[in-house]
Each structure stands twice: as C-alpha cells, then as structure tokens.
Amino acid sequence: MKIGIVCYPTFGGSGVVATELGLEMAALGHQVHFISYSRPVRLDANVANVHYHEVVVTDYPLFDYSPYELVLTSKLVSVVKQEGLDILHVHYAIPHASAAYMAKQILREDGIDLPIVCTLHGTDITLVGRDASYEPVITFAINKSDGVTAVSESLRKDTLEHFKVKRSIDVIPNFINLKRYEGLKRNEIRERYSKNGQPLILHVSNFRKVKRVQDVVKVFAGVRKRMNASLLLVGDGPERYNIEQMCRDLDVCDDIHFLGKNSKVEQILVNGDLFILPSETESFGLAALEAMAAGMPVISSNSGGLPEVNEHGFSGYLSDVGDIDDMIHHTLQLLSDPSELQRFKQQARVQAKKFSLPEILPKYIKLYEDLLSA
Ligand code: GMT
Image 1: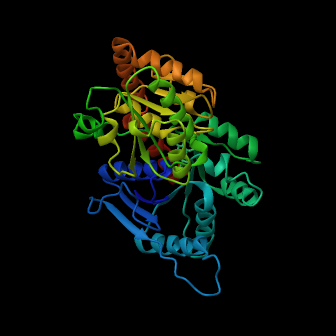
Image 2 (image 1 turned 30 degrees about the vertical axis):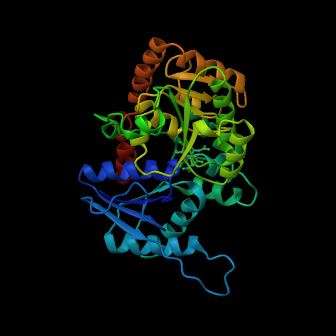
Image 3 (image 1 turned 90 degrees about the horizontal axis):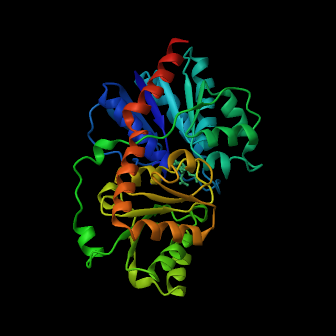
C-alpha cells in the first residue's frame, strides 16, 4: 500500500501514535508518506520506505492568519497525484479531516477516488472540536470520512454525544511498541536524581491546564512529608510558570526536577518507580501506557479513557479528578511496600502488553484493506 499520514509533528500523543503507526507499516514494506508542517519528533530521517513532505506556509501581508488548511489541502492533492497514494490517514480532526475532505473532492475532479481515514485523538473532540467555532466543520468532516476511529470507547461515546454523527466509529486503542523498551536498563538519570536510592516519581505531559500538573506537585508534596522521594517532570508547556510557583509555595523545589521535552522518553521512563497522571480529561492517556511499558505503576485520575488503560488495583490506581488525598494514599501504599511495588511494576508491564503493536496494528491494516477493497 501507499499510505499518506497527516499529523501534528509535536510531542503530543496523536503525533506519536501517527508516527509509530507509519513506521510499523513501513517496516512491513508499505510506502508511507508523512505530511506535516515540520518533521514529526519521533520520525528519524533515512528510514526505509518512509517519506516526508513538509507543508510550508508562506507569509503574505494581507493575512493576519495564514490559511494553513488550504496549503495543507494543496500539498495533499500534490502528494497524492505525484506519489500515487492509495489511502490517506489523518490524525486529529482539526484541521486535518476537513483538509482531507477538500483534497478528496479536488482529486475526484481528476477521476481519483481517495479513501480517507480519520482518527480522533481527544482534545479535537472533548475540548476544541465541540466549541461552536469548529463544531459544524468537524461534524461534517467526520460524517464524510470513509473510516473513522477513536482511540478509546470513552472518546467514541463523547463523539457521539457532542456531534451529530451519522456513521459508525471504530474503536482502535492506542498502542505501544514494546521493542523500544526491551533490554532498557536504568541509566545515569537514576544515579543523578536518586543519589540516596530514594524512589523516583515521574510525570510526562505538555503542561497544559487539562493535565493538572499542579496536582502532581501537590501529591508529591504530600508524599514527601512521609518519605524521601524525587519528582521528575518531563515535557514543557504553558503551565510551566504556575507549576514552578506551586513548587515554591509548597517548599518542595529541591526534590523536583524539570527535564524538558525529550524525544527518547523511554530512556527517562525506565528510571522511574511510579507515574502520576491526574488529568482533568484524557481520551486515552498514551503517557500512562508508555509508563506502564517501562514498568511503572500509574496513579491517575479516572476520567475519560483512563480506566480503559490503567486497571485499578492492578496496573496502578484510579482516583477522582482533584482527589489529592486519595492519590497520596495510593502512592504511599505502593512506595512504602517494596514487594507490593514490585508486584505492581510487573502487572503494569502485563497491562501494557494488552496494547502492544501485534494486538493493535492488524486492526488498522484491516480497516485500510476493507476501504481499499470496497
Ligand atoms: O493534550 C494532549 O495530550 C495531546 C493530545 C494530542 O492530540 O496529541 O493527546 C490526545 O491524544 C493522545 C493520543 O491519542 C491521547 O493519549 C491523549 O489522551 C489525548 N489527550 C487528551 O484527551 C487530553
């Protein structure tokens, strides 16, 4: 197959899932064409069967806002024609689904019928997409896609609840490439931040409000009152200053380390003992899955798709959003009992296997094949 993949190139989960999916399809011998405004962070150059087409938006004085969606549409038309793509898979509805629809109509004029798959990832539905300024376009683009997938049952339900969707939505959960975690050993990060052997607690996100990183700091401060521990905060984003302020307010700065963005996140995760993801909402929670793959139990909120990923009492614990005391309780329960922590670490790995590539990839391949033979 010749597959086009449209995604955001940033550290967000949708770009990561899109990249990993494309790389696996390329490893199977398919030709995969990534189309984005910058090289996706996890897409190395010079990988066999992988091609990258950059969408370059030029400035023009008339435009206060450059029309990215139009430039993307033109790029899609051009790549489909030049490369002879069989199928186009867009990740994150805004604005990729409507750009794909427009490209499909343009190509139809030339007698080309291009099947479009749209994968809904979360905030394109739960936060941004349902806003009145986007909703009619998103509804239309979802209804007009040839295949629509959601990364969790929770997101499928949210989509049906908030949009007038007249078509079926397949749930294809996010997946993890466990090969990235095989044979990984603790490294200098452990030595640097756990000098006295104290547990390392981790959090990874884009530091947006929806992630409630301040709750991570509050939980850590509660834990720190009872035991030695360090917290590594990986990622960056708009809440960074407020998070730093919270560290100062709670007097825990010395034990909290900001590691910034990192494209080889598994090299950090492998050093951790426990992961905290207290999000307001999370359609899936890929960060939790990556943490489990690295052998960390997850203390998370119970919102959105998180209960589908993190099994309460097995791979970690779930608490209501904002229930700091409950999260502190579960964290201490695990960190103060080495054998219990060890058991949960193993169970976290078992849970991650349920979302391993061999479990999930065939679902995407079947969807592509069904659309191509329709
Ligand atoms: O806000 C983010 O975490 C980024 C966003 C994205 O588009 O990358 O993440 C969403 O998609 C991920 C991959 O499917 C999911 O694992 C995240 O749960 C989802 N984020 C939210 O729903 C807040």
